[in-house]
Amino acid sequence: MVDISSYKRFHAEYERHFAGLFYFAKRFVEEETACDIIQDFFVRLWEKQMTFKSENQFIVYIYHSVRNRCFTYLRNNKRNMARLSQMEVPQSEESFLEQIIEAETYSLINDAFAELPESSKRVYIKSLEGKSHKEIAEELQIAINTIKRHKNRANHYLRERLKKLFFLIALLG
Image (cartoon, rainbow, N blue to C red; front, side):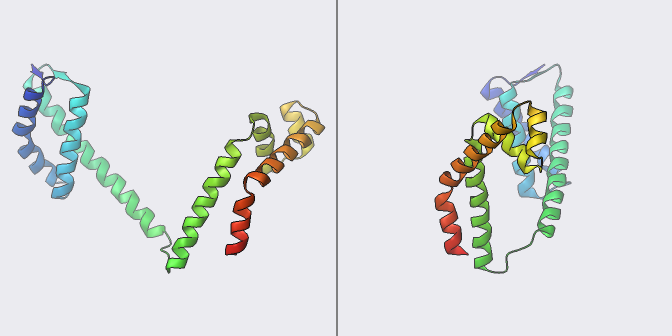
């Protein structure tokens, strides 16, 4: 039985198996990445406080887990490389600044929208989806005047909440 619940036993198992796992992981990933994967795996193993019926079961488990983590790393790295190749790299510092402003603007608008009362938010979302007052009223089973009131309140709140943002955008534009 392999019980790694004590730190001393856990550390001994780490020391005992690190070199073999490192050599094994290097077949899939670079050395530095292999070290990171193995260390991360052992941290997770420690957190789980697992017990194994036999030494063989433990060895199979750790090698299988490290191999899977290497494959996950490679798959994620491949996706990230594909994303990077598709991304438009800013041509200038001004372009980069514009991307930051755009992201921050989106964040501020999203935060303001999240502060709306749930009923107003529901009506506003349906309106943004292109639905008419009549369609929204039928779907939510409320009066058309109530729809108009929710939209007006939401517009007023968003306008007030984002007034400074609109001013900043006007200055930058």
